[in-house]
Length: 68
Ligand code: SF4
Image 1: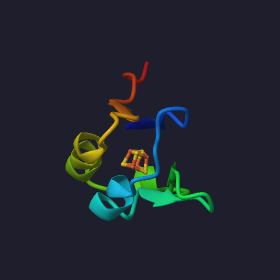
Image 2: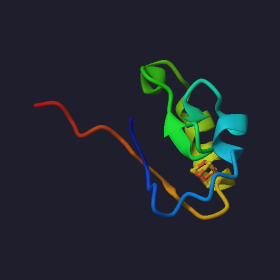
Image 3: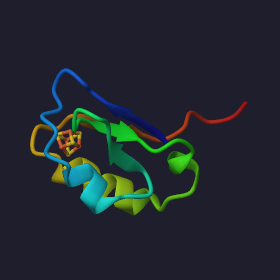
């Protein structure tokens, strides 16, 4: 799973960290950021819920590309 946070769009509401704390946290300025290694350990549903909870749609989620 690939997760991106658009840091130009993020307003630091913290909804992502509240919804999926194993994946998202907030930096020192309050903006959303990814927990190191968090994307490997979480349920995809939580990530999707966090993306939907973001009030400014700053989170993009995509499946990993197929392995060849
Ligand atoms: S929910 Fe969206 S706006 Fe709020 S901290 Fe996370 S990425 Fe930023």
